[in-house]
Length: 284
Image 1: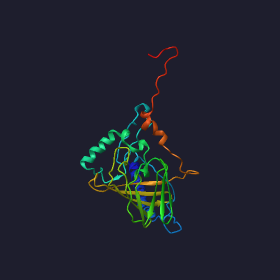
Image 2 (image 1 turned 135 degrees about the vertical axis):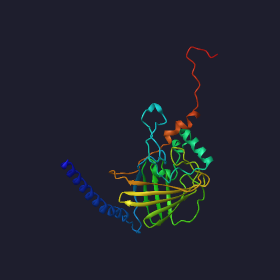
Image 3 (image 1 turned 135 degrees about the horizontal axis):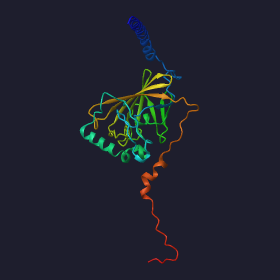
């Protein structure tokens, strides 16, 4: 009993020492993260140049979700959808009642309705967190985003005030700097893109405010505030880290998915050749 008590006392001392060390170090760790200052370009702005990629399951569903089988059961585990904690802040998406009905219909008819299944451009913000890398190239006047999926791209005009002349798949992006954060105001998007493969959608009134903030030499914090009064009762936000691809000789490769979907989209239009009569038989 005496040895047992001594052991407990020693353990308690160790816990106190470790706890003291942790609380003395933890603030400095937080301060180091907050104090990170990104490398600068020639014009003094944070250098965001590089190839980046999101790691997570937002592509499948931006909200929290369980793992489930893929759409083609005979493929077994291949094509299965992994579970995820979600990237939406502040609870469920604030759908209007009629919009929530459409969202559920989209989810039930995912393969038939999801624009990405047909190789349409993914739009913003979905292009950011698809399982494909994208490249940022910046200058004082412009920041270019090139996405590997379907050759998607857009140019952010720094300081531009003009409105979108027409709606488009990748929208109209106007940029500004808030300290070390690149802020992108996105409007003018067609209503045909989705947020994910779970049927979460928007209307032609979609307005986004994106924020790209360097958090380390090889990571960015991506935040986007979503506003669409036709679909949602209030603005909402999602956020996630983006990671620099450090692979040797890393570059964007071609992912031209158009040939992959030709049969899906146009196979029913194929002309059927008439049957050729067998030799020696007369046509009746």
